[in-house]
Image (tube, rainbow, N blue to C red; front, side, top):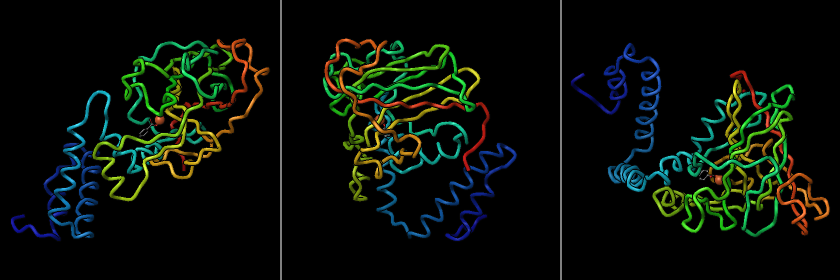
Length: 293
Ligand code: BEZ
Ligand code: FE
């Protein structure tokens, strides 16, 4: 097409692509460009606004490092990460939730009943549960990759004052599928706002807060892996998570317990003479690739 117009440019774009080269690429790229063109036409996008968008992408790229994933963060605050998760969740399994940009691989082993808080102070939380299949049978040998922020609201990768793997642990469950660990009650925190994503949040009049949570990646041979989070039912940001990660079945009551009830078999049993919080959260893994409706 020689005479490209604002009305035919989308069709011209589609004509330039070959479906045979890669049918899925044709479908995804074609849809993306259709929506992009419609967006520009609908909003009558100006040159200045287009340049602002390009500068946003350049700004994300400029601060991207091994520990800083601004593009992932952009996808998170736009709701795209959560939407993709929900499109591909299994019907019967525990809901998935955002991975976020702060997971680091290679966490040190944490024994069942181990302590993740080490020398850090703050309200003690004991988390316990069973990793099960969708029929309720325990999954022997499942692995739980756990991470959370320190009490200052920062992940280890954001904070030079923490060890690389502080508040990270990799637990392998036994034949009963049970996991348990002690930690400090997670705090609500803000996603990083010192980069281009922070500029977008401010420009849209949005706050950067996430409700407090524990992150889990649960894996077991023969099962679909699950990336998820647990939220306490009294968190003030449950209804306004800036990355859209809250699902009903991930909201749990953290029960207050007296010191005398501290569970046996925990690494810090006998050392705790203060009340603590307790949460029981079972995780169900699916084998089939059934989708949530
Ligand atoms: C997180 O929970 O670690 C997180 C998720 C999305 C964006 C920023 C942080
Ligand atoms: Fe987090």
